[in-house]
Length: 392
Image (cartoon, rainbow, N blue to C red; front, side, top):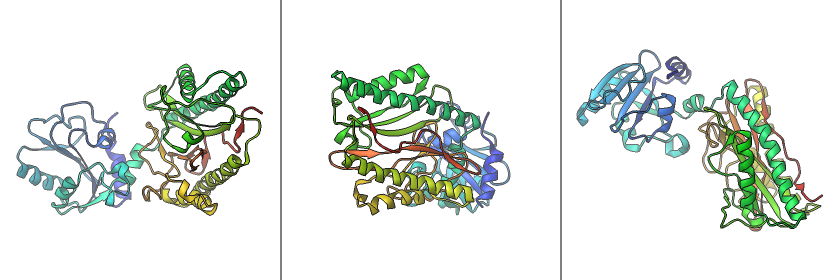
């Protein structure tokens, strides 16, 4: 299909930028490779590709790798010596005053900070002001097609059946006094994934009690804890279809291996649920009103609830992340803690909303996915409103 130059130029004009400068050295910028849809090839030297807001793109490649950018349109400049590179880079940029690059001031959004400081200095030496491409990247990396949304929803329907099945397995094993570990449940989920045509890069996370206080806990055969009566069980499950271009569905649910959920667990879940719902409500209200909303503002809405309840120090990760072909995509994150994500939520994107409270002896998180279209935002799957009493 190839890179869509017209679409890039449309976004550059809207952002009042003179162009977008892509560059790479030995695959350091996978974003550039994906957006430009470059085929496999020999690229051991630096290359630059400039898409101006108006006019034809230009390439700058090494003389011994003349075909490095053969897959994209534009006139080609060549270099071998450093002075030649610098001179032709300046010539390539022409009269441009402001150009976007995969750069983030003070590394505030590290997910797009792919270009090294020295290259930024080199470009600035030509008289061009370097601006972050973060919003542009989101437009071309994070927006879903209709087919991707449909695939996400289909995966969600499958996972929304698998998760209750995993809880039922745990409950049945406890009732029948059969040995079962976190790792066993993980493998059971992966077997169901195989049956449903679902794949995942890693995971799922299956954690009991204090293990659930580690947001990225990953049980192994050797380290997995047994699942017993009276345990709190957290399942963080994500997957996508085994189809090229498919996108992830990502949720977290919590169950209790008993007939009645203890108050200490129910209390914390209620706070987490209210934080989750506050974030979702802000997204929905803003999208419906056509009001711009930034990622850090969503994080703030959830974090205020948890801080007001006195558990702020136990919520030590962002409220949510962009979801795409990788489970942690390159769109805006719901983050005002780890970073200050000032990118706007835009139509065609999907994000997790997953606040959590992680105490020394147990952790609780509740996660849903929120998809945004032109006029509304919606949760794309089942929503947990209380801890499941698995032996009731």
